[in-house]
Image (cartoon, rainbow over all chains, first blue to last red; front, side):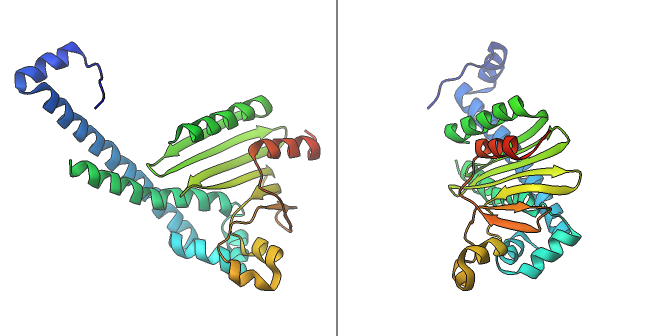
Length: 110
Length: 131
């Protein structure tokens, strides 16, 4: 349990509407859900952008650059010589969706 | 983002600001991962940096470009060319392994390196590029 200060005007309103602590927790839960949902939406958008750019999904791309030199040749000549930088960001986006979805699930179960 | 990684990124950005101009960056995090993407200018060169901490593994790319040409690029991606260079005929047994390496001359030359930090990269720039 953590203590935080809330503005008196909110405390007054929420107290009138019912249990203050419960109201604050519900409000925070809703805020967290909203923020996480926005994060997931943004990461999915970037994941799709990379998928369109490289013509395959993250798993296939990360496997092919590790095993297929012709594929790297094609990527570097036709798409981007900086694919390593995209690969790291793509991993962040792709796996990040799972990370946040897991967190969202845990919040929804509270 | 773990406090250590946050400090690591902040230190990297501070160092970048002492050497480069037009430093721009994005930090992002999930409950399991942290990434820093940084771009800057160094004289006539463009600097493109990425550091990802994912599943407790550090993945980096430190690149310097002149216009669209890659002058040098240090990274530790699981690049088949680097894996072959390191393991030769046994490369297949090491698919997916992170291998620190250096690209030169617009990625026409490849050399194996030790694990690089951003500080190592800036030292390399000072020694090897005139601005």
